[in-house]
Amino acid sequence: MVNYSATEENYLKTIYHLQQQAGIVTTNDLASALHSAPASITDMLKKLSKKKLVQYKAYYGCTLTLSGAAAAIGIVRRHRLWEYFLSQKLGFNWEEVHEVAEELEHVSNQKLIDKLDEFLGFPRVDPHGDPIPDAEGRVHQGSQMTLMDLPEKKTAIVTQIGNQSAPILEMLNDKNITIGTKIQVIKKYSFDHSMEVKADNKHQLHLTRELSQNIFIKN
Amino acid sequence: MVNYSATEENYLKTIYHLQQQAGIVTTNDLASALHSAPASITDMLKKLSKKKLVQYKAYYGCTLTLSGAAAAIGIVRRHRLWEYFLSQKLGFNWEEVHEVAEELEHVSNQKLIDKLDEFLGFPRVDPHGDPIPDAEGRVHQGSQMTLMDLPEKKTAIVTQIGNQSAPILEMLNDKNITIGTKIQVIKKYSFDHSMEVKADNKHQLHLTRELSQNIFIKN
DNA sequence: ATAATAATTTAGATTTGTCTAAATTATTAC
DNA sequence: GTAATAATTTAGACAAATCTAAATTATTAT
Image (cartoon, rainbow over all chains, first blue to last red; front, side):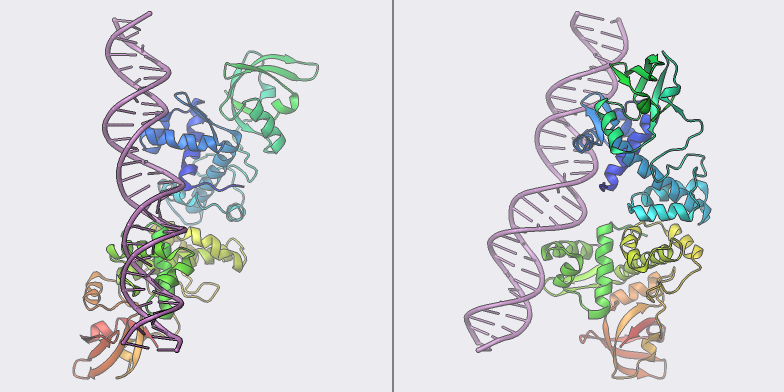
């Protein structure tokens, strides 16, 4: 596991949140979210791109790669666990916790976070109702639908990968599927439960059942 | 209250610890304690000197000013409270806590630390037996002696100021007395309990009872 | 008391993350 | 479909914290 600077972590986290609403994240979106000049965003996106944390194409915007998303989810996990701690154990008001958690989230010690999680009783939602990702990076949000459940012709957005093992990440990377990718089901084959899909309105792909069962989506 | 960078805080904390053993802290002492090149230390000492956190004279070394010492004590407080938390609440082994606390100590939110202190039950020593400074910056170490208690002719080192109010700090700054200053009592006047002392074998000063009662010392 | 050695500082360079102003590419309006 | 406008990138600069190599100041050994 690699370590990122607090600045890089803030970028990853912000891209992650913006991406949940808008698929592709633009330079200006990031600039206003991070209160930085657009030129600074461009510089950092190039850096993150070189580290394979985001996919970045000049003038188009960026999306997180799977390793970028995994890192972002780790940061969200730390943030929300600290918020829970501050509110439940230290008696902070709910409005105050965010600011302090913004600092604590950058203390990156795996054991610290896992012990904290245990100390808090493995909470799955923070007091805002937002889900706290578990130690494996899984986000338990309300109703969980996978690509398997999506009918033909319908479109949805990838929200999560159900399995963080290297083999699946490699395959999804090759197929250019990541968190935020828009997927439309073209045809489903009952014979082997595989399916033909179109990703981001561009490339067409054939997915096995094993794969589509591990791709979590929302509409 | 001002905020310092994590780097500045590490310098202040290290100077504080070194000073407890050796009065004046040299560039090389700091370089080996911080694993940095001596040239880097010089640069930072100039910076801290400009901010009035240390007294620095080229080729001689440095000591903390009172505001530098106050900041350092705050950092030590945060460090030891986190160590206590990690060991008592999260079940860390005692050898592991230091490293994690090194990161947590730089999260500088006053309310966080005071709430944490309360949550932990206001512990006064950490599991190492080292004292945890209280919210006012007072360090409760074993037997506490003030300058008032020091007999004529005897010499001692200033360890702590019993009162962090602006008026006393201003006065001590003018008199060039700080943590680590060596003080010898020249004469005590029973009439008003004031005393004549010599500081750092250099300047001679007259101190009122109010002042000498607030200057804590060790031999 | 001077020469050799050790400690410290200066000078100049590097990395990270940022900025402003100018140039370039995309988008929108007509 | 071209002109105006908006978004983005490039170029060049800066501050913080660090480094190495060279110069300077202190210390020590004889």
